Length: 224
Length: 230
Image: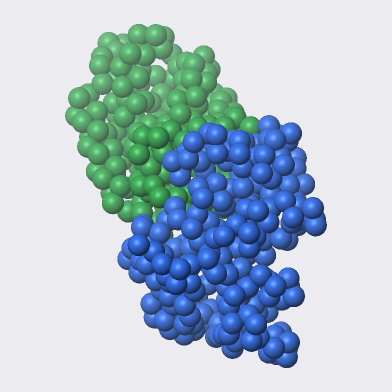
């Protein structure tokens, strides 16, 4: 299984490196959105709940761009059939796609978080960063698992560009709530504190539940 | 111990529909190991559907289909990896090179890197193996598709118009891999009865999903074939 996942992951990253169809668009979208917020709010800086909300809503919508393109090369170029003809565990594709999306999100956040700190955030990001990394990791896992599940469902339909976000956004609302609530205390100007443990726990449980659902359903999504 | 007359395909009343439309209806046949089945029929006759069912990519909706001694779809897992499919699409990624594509499929099938090199040499593409497929001609991509289909040395080849996009030299080149001399059991869908009949042992003529002709190649008459396309 690990060899299959490695082969799939290598292929995914090679295709993205050659086409640059997902990650640059995601990063550009996030930075543009921060600029828009900067002017639309008519405030030079934000903190606390507002900062956490802006950060997570922006990351969520940027992630949707990657989710929508996750299976496009497979669907359009026969990659699904090529994979289904191989004597391998089909869960390998789920795992490889989740890892691919996680890699996209990590690159996105490498660009988006510093841009957010530079364009909008009032408190210095350095102090919040170690705790923020935990929140980012847990929320990214939820986005990656749910995004992969929904993308696999949507890609074989004619309205895949519409159906992906329509299905994913309601499922990802709890992730955004949990991530924003966990991030908010990290980004307060006065008395910043660590993330609330219950929101981290909520994110972790949500990831686990959807991980199990995705594992149970993914085979059926690939089948005729 | 597999014998010379071992059945590789056994179809009995095989059916498949798309919604209300019957794409395959009651197809029955037996194909022995090492033999070639030529599937003829006009567009929409059900040829591609038949290949996709045999490749385990589509579930049969009626009747039974035994491939390499295993019942579909229940034992499809046992058949995957023993089938080579070359369809209308080469099942390759345009942004990857020929070598990267073949290496990817080799890893999925647990095949070594030396086989990738062997296949690139067999389809005479070692010189262009490092170029993305989108920069290659359709004929070259088809040759990579042929290499991909036989990379894992499958027992059963399912070929849908395998010589489309290939020039005579490339047809000759790929014949060792997918032609009669490959010694594999083959199912070939074709619109070229003359070429197909020369290589076939058994002919299945489909029209609107039904088997209108099923006979040994030597016994098939020209008027039967002409009737299929009328």
